[in-house]
Image (cartoon, helix red, strand yellow):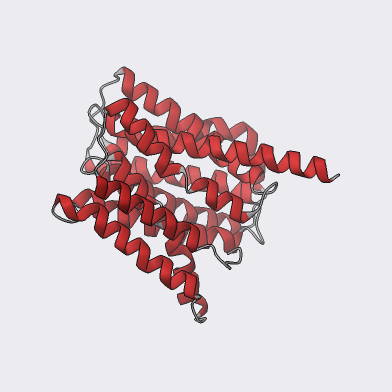
Length: 289
């Protein structure tokens, strides 16, 4: 029995590691695709593609959600869309590696949000993690003249994703996580589509990079990524999930080097290392939120 449980945990951990690698790969891929397509156009197609694939599989789960569950799925979709928009636009002005490391700050921000909401005394590890994360961000961005607009947008993305996680952890206790996940993808697709139409950012050249980015982000990063995450989190611990997802910016750095020959400065490496350390430290003594 113990061997079976360990085998299931190992499979889940490997699946999550693969997901983190795919998400890391999307940073340089999206930046390359943005030369031929606008951020909102890419996100609209990405989320609609994922929603179409999920429709025959998860439609019944969405319909079975209570009215409050459907409302929460819309809220989750708004937060997911906001984070995705800020992150994607930010990639036009900052490097994929910096974007990935800054995005990882959401793991440090989550405990801080919970502390503020519940008005409880913060753990020392949370305070230290927040301070180290801010230091890492400063070290990473200071050589290039400070935080550029892309970095600021990505910081906003990290906050949006952090609020998304807090809300998701609160509502999945009472509502079906699969139905919520499908509902949020539909909401994100509709919101990005409406913004695309109203802002007239219809730039789209169907280059090979654009088609590749749409397939990877829509099918693998969104549909498979969320599906694997929902399954794997039932088979492994929250600590395992956090540690494995902390590798996402490392994968982004590797793929950025391979695809774009990005040269990582000493400050980027040092700042990134501090952020990863802060992410892991934030989980010391943490309960599952």
